[in-house]
Each structure stands twice: as structure tokens, then as C-alpha cells.
Length: 402
Image (cartoon, rainbow, N blue to C red; front, side, top):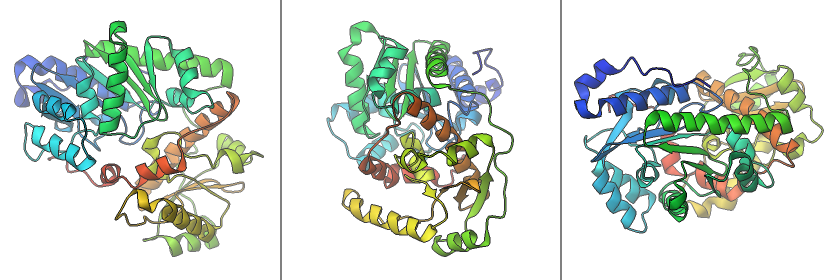
């Protein structure tokens, strides 16, 4: 994790695109975003979001943009009065919410803002920063997750049980903050989701973020052997998997997939665990990862059986997303005692992203197991995210020009 330092490198862009009175806040928000986004133990592959409020506007990260490289084009300027009206409506469907965001945008045709813009608006602080920090997720992905997170992080942190992102989350989390308004809490932990920190100054929210992650990492280090050091350099090796496995993947995929492989010591230790059939089949560490990794990895090499199981999973829950069409049933993560970790994707970059995500998943699962047992969202909850249109669109290419 990197200290605050001095925000630099964006003044020229801001001078051309924003009013002088808000330049400081935008500069500092971009600086915080880049610092958070460049730490893979906080954010992976497009995750996380940030915002800053001025008197009339909320500047929120655009959906699908990379925090680590965020610039002004990746911030969407929203009318706070319009957002307040949306919150007062009491109920909004996903499509109504996104239409409301489009109407609130100060720049027609701008990219869609983060799904969580309403929550950013509802929290009464100038700066709001959100990541899916591994250490925070590891605390909540345990048998007694919410209680453990509260114990480790302190009484001034609000812990909210899992809630589907969108309008419901904005209402639930903001109500939880309002219930403790007198405490002026500056952090919210969302189970199986991540960490929000707030501040009247961007640096304050950033420092608070790092402090809470540090507390979580220190506890996990003492109690669960946690490590936040870089992974072995052997990751991401593109390899020829056995011909039979490659043929099976090609047969079930919509298009022949790209493949990445990792078989370092950490991976090998995990894929040879005696309890792998149990701990690996409990679901993803955080909702952010479902649409990249699918809910479960394949154990071994029976791709056809995996595809059949995936089809049954879809059929069990299809009623939860009327009109949804089943996605490609190809396993995105394969755990094999000889091959190690094999990941797939429609292109090499996606296969590498899945590999990165699952290497972090391994550490979270192992820490949670040492703390009493790894537990995460239910099968139905995972399906709701995997087949949620508002998440699916985040995997589509983004035109930064808006």
C-alpha cells in the first residue's frame, strides 16, 4: 500500500476540462484512485470506485474504467439534486436507476457511472472511496464474518450484511449509516463485497482506507498466516495444456478459448489439499469476480461434466432473471493436481485476469479456513450477479471518448 504523497500529473487536463474551483478535489480524487487501483491487493481488473462531491455535483468513477489509470474522462459528473430525487423515490428497478443516472449526467452521452453512485451520493462526506481489499473480504468470508470484521476493525466501522448492488444497497447502507449518524462513522464494510471509507477531505478518506486494511492484514497475519507480498513470478505462463483438455474446452466454448497456467508452490499446495473438493466449491470470494471466474472452478479435467453441471445451475435459477440466455458453459478456472491452476477466457488478457483473480482467491480461502471456515454468498446470490445485466455490460469494451 502506498502513502498519500503529492497529487501530480493531472493539472493540465483539469485546466482544460473543469472549473478552477473544483480542480483540487478532482486532482486529489484521481490521485487516490490511481494509488488504490495500482495495488492488486485492493483492486483487480476494473474493480473499485471513487467519487467526490462539490456543492452541486457528484463526480463518480465511470463503470468499467480502470482505477489505476483513471483520468478525467473516467469521472462522470452527476447532478446531486437529481440523485436526491432518485433516493426519495423509495424504489427503483435497475433499468430505472440507470436511466436516472443518464438523466442526471451533466454531459449527454457520457459513460455510465458506477452502479454505486447513489450510495456515494447518500453518504454525507465529500470523498468516498471503495475497494474490494483482499484482507477485508477475507474477514467477511468466514463463518462469523460480520462479527469478526467488527471486532477487528473497531466500533466506528459499520458492517452491512450482503446486499445485491444497486438501489437496494444504496438504501440499506445509507440507512445503516444514518442509524449511527451521531457516531459520524467514516467506514462501511459490505460483506462479500469490500470497504467504503469516507472523509471531508480525499486524503482523509484515503488514509482511513489504508489504516483499516492494515488492521485487517495484521490480524490475518497473526491468526491466519496471511501474506500480502507479491506473488511468485511464475504466474501467467501461457502453456500447451494436454491435447485432450484443449479439445474438450474447444468443444464446449462458443469460441476456442485462450489459456493461462500457473503451477508455483502456492498454487500446487492449494490444488493438492485433501479438502479441495469442499473449500473450492463454496463460491467466489466477492461478488465482483463471478462474471469473470464463474461461481465454481472445475476440479480435474472433465469439461463435459462441468458444462452439464453449469447448465443445471442455470436451469435451477433461470426464473430469477426472466429472459436471460445461458452464458458460455466453459470453465473459467480449472484446478488440477498435475497442471496446477489453469484459466480460460475469450482472449489472452481475460485468461490472465481470471488467473490473477484466482491467485488472490486462494489466499483468501486459506485465511478464512484458518479462521473457522470459508463462507461466501449463496448459489442464488451468485447467479443474480452473474446474470445481472448491469454487471454483464462491464465486461464489454469501453470507449473512453464516451
